[in-house]
Image (cartoon, rainbow, N blue to C red; front, top):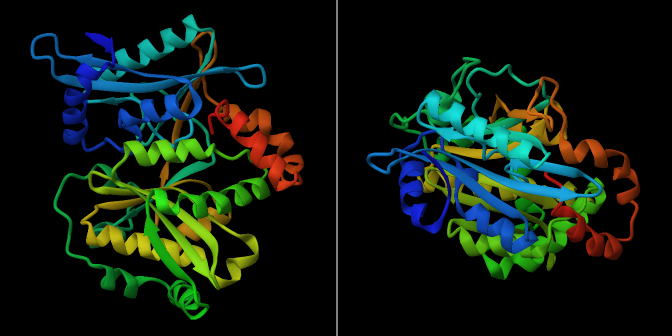
Length: 365
């Protein structure tokens, strides 16, 4: 039986997420509230339950985006790297996928399913985007196998602490962390009390990248609905020069957003923020740190790679309005917005900050 998520299903869904090794923070039902409160978009989830016991067997969160600029898109999930179908067996996965395809067809929308794991029976989409994951067990960090799947490994974590990990880092990385300290960079952690500083730096960075910024209300909603969320801000000479948003979820630490001021990067604030986050992950007993999506061989990819993050495939399955699978992946928002990046990067900051949040809710990236 497949039904729409409602508050009465939340406890059962959370039990399902708690027992599923493939579950990640993007599957959390709280995202439906975040998206609604921040952008007033229609977010929902299809849930398959056992007809006899009522136990949840699978779920698929989704959000409908429609605008004149970007068309109609059903995305699982926008604004995040993952959040696709989560199922305990292939039958449930097929039923949920068919339900999403049918829903998109009924809305005459394109469908994009984002996942950290491949879907059964579909070709692997061609994509240069990858997921960067840092495993925190000694076995997985030093594993040379190309098939590393520590994300879903339910076994015990091998003994490794922050000190051992630190000693295993390249000397260049350790020196960059020390440089931040010698430059007077300090990191402060908090929640709502850190949001103003984080958001100011985030907006500057997004404008420089040529991308509309998220609304401040988006981050407010994330803090409101994710008790494991924290913001770290890097300061030097009384000025905030960098910020990082992390989410502790189950035994994973995710870092979905991080920014630093371009002119201050010589002082390595990003290195200080990431090292503090990784050290916290060890202290919290996490199995992994999720650095999020990167484009292979670009700057952010190389930065994450130096922390011993592993490259894993990022699966983005896309279907046209008629439900036909598209073998060549294209990113709905980025493909249509790409030509404007150079123009956006030259906008006055005040104008970019005013227009960005109005556009961002319709951009799935």
